[in-house]
Length: 70
Ligand SMILES: [Zn+2]
Image (tube, rainbow, N blue to C red):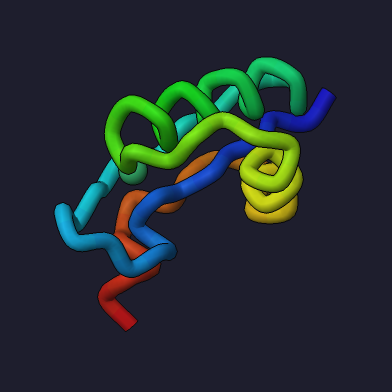
C-alpha cells in the first residue's frame, strides 16, 4: 500500500498554511483534506471540492522543504 499526501504549501493561501496531511488510503486522506479545507480555508464541502482535492494527492510522504519556496 502506498501512502498518499496532500500539501497545502503547494498552493497560495492568504494565511500561508503549511499543513500537510497524509494517510494510507484515498478515502481517509479525502476526509481529512475536506475537513481541513472547510474548517481552515472556509471552503464548502461539495462534490466539486472533493474532486478538486483528490486531484492534488501525491504518492509518498510530504517533503520537509516547502514546495512553495521555489
Ligand atoms: Zn491548509
